[in-house]
Length: 366
Ligand SMILES: *Cc1c(COP(=O)(O)O)cnc(C)c1O
Image (cartoon, rainbow, N blue to C red; front, side):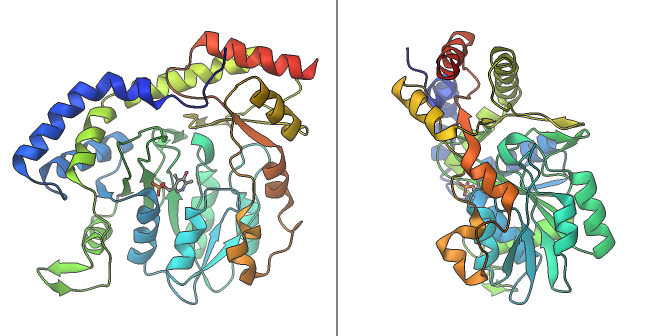
């Protein structure tokens, strides 16, 4: 029996009829861009994520870009980011003309290391983008303390972490701006590309609403240069329905993680660990092994879905060669790229499927 890495079909089939009805309603109104369905989604998202303002956007990538633009981060500014994350985190910094400054991560949580942030701050530092990797928040208490002492902005990349909490504070609600992605494989997965920015700051929210529309503050009057970062009504229709099920998706993922923890306790793999005070929502269930590549080959031969997030750290990407980083410079992140592998994880993953995954892993170590 093979086990897929992902099964978004089951989750989406279950809501398909409700989504179709919502889509029909959008078609009736012809409000395909923004409009009242989007406004309804934004209210529901703000409530779920514990913030006063949510602004729907075209993707998680654009959420990051828009947050940086709204905070006026640009040429001459440095932004501290982890090197072990999806590309967009650092790509957005480059795109606004600022310089990404990569600092190392914590070996247990894989999230940015607050001590490394502290050590990298210069006169040019303007913001920090902690990423809540795999569904667990970075150490936001330490990060906010550093940021407040130095007057830096914090943009949370919560693309993988809607629903996660750091000491009861929802992911995306703690920094100046939180960025969400609704890419179909995220914990709240849409029917296409979209995302959102979250903020407690009403003025900043308004500015981001303007930037979403080419910086337009009144019709054809542009206070800023923004972009087209709009979310569409059909996407919002699907997300409103799926947001109602987010608690159930989250419970499914957390239950699956608990079963893995029991099934894999005897094998010589390092299993994911929630740090003290962290409520992990397991966008990925990522283990680590010094024999990672051999293990992957064995999983593949047995049709067990798996994927390496991420095989090459961002400070070593060809497009960032101009920054001058060398291999070995961020050793914790580089070791992670060589040792991690994510196992099948989705809300409807069954105990039987997980027993199969565990049996194949057991076989590898025997
Ligand atoms: C998915 C993801 C993004 C980008 O989101 P898109 O909606 O795909 O643009 C950004 N950062 C992280 C950490 C992600 O996982």
